[in-house]
Length: 305
Image (cartoon, rainbow, N blue to C red; front, side, top):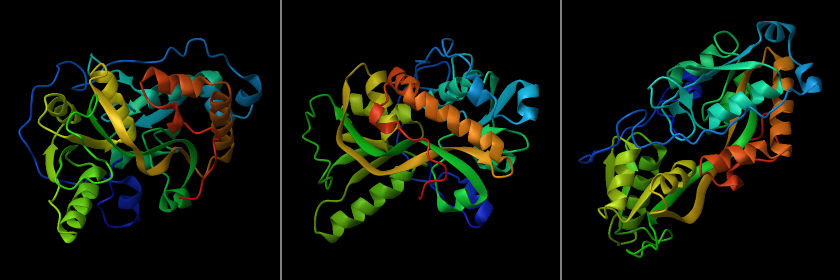
């Protein structure tokens, strides 16, 4: 979840990351996005649905390719593989699955996060890049909900330090710089101080892989991240970590389509619903180690934020 720290409608719609403190980093793996692994789902078995494909605008059908905008720097949703170029992640797999359902090739094109929404309908057919559904966004774009993401804590397996997610006062918690969780922890720290308790010691790192490594190494009591990121950390560490305390402040994320193209919106919504109904969406999440509870079962158009 990337927090909005901007003024004006376009900036708020596009969204930029917020800042935070820093801590000494640790080594991260080389190749691709640091601290990641390719667990891509094989979409080759997905066949075209002629009825849904018939809903597409003629221009998209004749082009034969669904162009998807994504900021490929956000594992495990959308990031780059070992060659530093190929987009991978559960959002990328979803885009490919939608394309195959529609009988189209899928081309995932990287763009800086703030530039993606202005390009929907011109540079990109759709956007799939962890876009949180907000009232500001649904006023300007169509959004098809497909997943809920919030924040969650992860600890060493067995919780040897006795971290209590319901009372974090006095705990040492790691977080990635520039994420919404930095802001959340600042609020929790202030609440601890107001209650006369020990404040949270927040250690901020530039890379999520640094946070994960320091938790495995015992420097931290817990890490705090997007719920999908915490799930993925348990996979990357081969079960050395576990998620505790459930998901906080969950919000829907949506596929973005131009409001000027209702025919494309209807086709994407129908394809997404089919992938939910036949279990493909759950299988994609499972492949990446993400809780299937995060995946929605209804591809709702412009849900209330």
